[in-house]
Length: 256
Image (cartoon, rainbow, N blue to C red):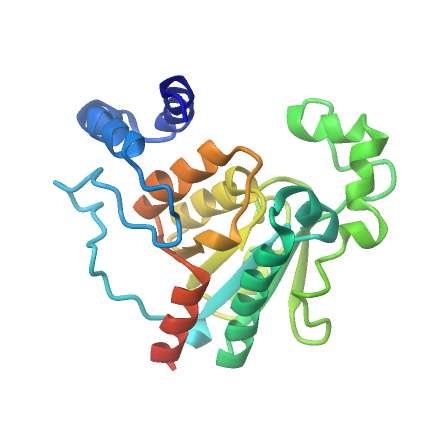
């Protein structure tokens, strides 16, 4: 990757941090980003904030209170998976292993999907992102019929919960929070497509709402690989535990 490409990816995410973090740790963040590992199979906490309370220790112990934890599988619809997940079979194998492990442990599994009424009356012309979908019949096909359904390899129709949303964030305008409150859920494990879309938006909201969070890194996907990488390695670890699908299964084994 060229230095120019790394600089662009670094700049587009740096602004997501508070001003005082940028001022104090900006250079350190850049150094960490530019020297990042090429393999995201194990994501370690970044050095940012190592002088303060935001540090996540390398040997942090993770455990789930199964009864109060829900797994959020977000925007893993057949059409979206076909566009974003490359290679698709490997992505689905990892994601399937996560939802299966959660079910076997007795953890609530909630699928969040994007959906609209005919004509997309939920979409405002002021919304730059979704108005582009509303004006494009081709893009709307992703949210129609079988393409709009949660990928069949991931869902248990009888037992899983499905929440339909009309925005990027899984909480915005949905009954997700009501479902979580009804089950006394205080911790969320999440993955989905895209990393810079639903995962980022939902993570930020849930963090501010005081949920304890974990992100399954290798079950997230994004067309912008640079942005995906820096979110997984730099931003997300400041707000959540970042783990792989296999690490998630291992934690469930010790949490039972």
